Image (tube, rainbow over all chains, first blue to last red; front, side, top):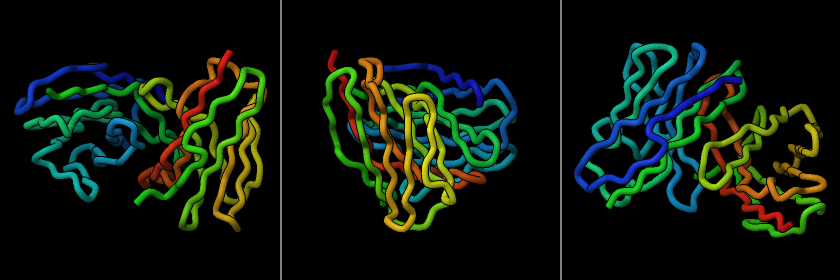
Length: 113
Length: 111
């Protein structure tokens, strides 16, 4: 398994601002992912963070709203841009360990006022 | 659309009882995974069962998979208050494919 940390663990932000969430892994991993969990809902994949190239976004998610960086094999950031109350969610990063299992970070709980 | 649908949506039991959660999915799979989430925090990976397996155990957890019915169940035996959490099934994830999560079951274990 992998040990994953996220910063911040939670934040309260004003609408129209942006927040960058960091994800750090204790070992090099080939694949990192960002998920969103809206209140009372299940998880939805936002994008796959690719090292050295642009992230791959799922339908309904765009780079302008959720820019992602992946400068190396242990670190990634997700920015939630121009936030609105609808962006209030838990944001989780995950990594693929081996070929089958994804492990998740502790999540970032975001509230937008 | 969600791959997995889970039932029940919520389950409340007494400590010491067994808890069973079910998950159904729509397309063929290579594996199915179960995760636990405590109080809206990160997900903890519980168990993975491959499509050629029918049953798997891990401590007090027992997972079954019926590919003919496209369904899986998670049994937690001798439940504890600390088992109170949301439980999600998920399909996919292998080789970097995206995980598709079910709606989840909220389990409350009363002491």
